[in-house]
Length: 89
Image (cartoon, rainbow, N blue to C red; front, side):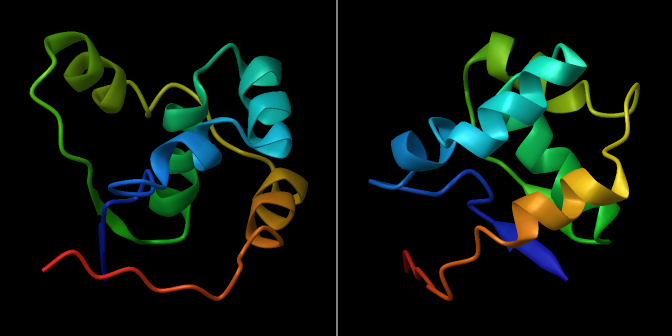
């Protein structure tokens, strides 16, 4: 499975990156919220395709393999699902 726009996509990124649960988990790992969200997807077996042309964001997006989310953290993030689907094409 592929996750296109795993960070929310147009108009939805801000809400996702400012989510209090994700912020708390990110702080506990010394990572950004974006890294936590991408790692959550990877641990669920989803191939993530974040888009960026910013070199700093590209490096950040690749720095996902030096930490793992706990089962409890995975569950906490999963409860944030609002059953929404966003198509950008």
